[in-house]
Image (tube, rainbow, N blue to C red; front, side, top):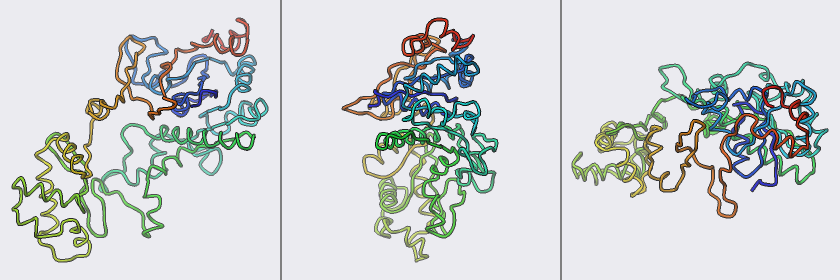
Length: 408
């Protein structure tokens, strides 16, 4: 799909997913690393019995379908090689602090002189300018300032972020979309494009309908833990089951099914079925109308029905009868998840220490232009000669000068 295009990846861990997405779509991604390697090469978790620069599973996870070249951008030879690569590239992606690349003479304006059709993508915490541009930032602070932490967790405790850091993954995904959108504009206009990606803004999008809540209803959503607030009533959404938790929303047709199943299993008497039109029961609750059975008793009935069944049983029954319900899966359960197995989602990845493990698959399954892993994460400087010698035509001594002491 993107096989005619070349991407220069100058990012660290904050943007490596962006170029991996473009690489998975077929682009030739050249990972430009400093002589000592990308900072992500030393990020945990770390493999045992692997070369030092290849121990990071963080690096391995987000750098497939890339070639690695080391350039010492503090030297004239390294900078000259980068500009030569930029002349041949279609995209440049970087994740430095705002203005840092420009101060080094490697920013958009400089690259524009080398390539007037370049798409330059800059990923930063708050964007390249504005009141927060130079603020320190972390996954925690960006999750807070982007909004998700205002919605996550129970109201009687401090806000929490998603356990596994998510901010830079969301920002990187948005950056990939921005890069392709900008490229389409470049093709139409013939003009270079600058894409300014704010991680904070990317996190705002993860709040979904909470973004528009105030404009629609006049007030913001508040943290409510495992419940959802409708009017003056809180509806529980996470329930204990025999081997963990499931998420369900007992209203409408779903509640009608839960009551039917509960009567079939003798949890409540058969009289319950005809006592209410259960598909509109929640409207009666919200409007304060007279109920055949109190809301608390109905919720307790659903809780008792759920509690005796496993996540797999609940999922299979819900799929069979069209009732929205989802297990809260652990990582181990996801690896064994039947749908992912049967659809061939998992790929077998050869790790640098000789192990082979299942790893998450490609983002889409296309028929005309199928995506594939052409290469796994590269060794540090693995393609120096191939790229600098073969693509740029540098001599061995020029390549060594450009790469720096650790990349020759």
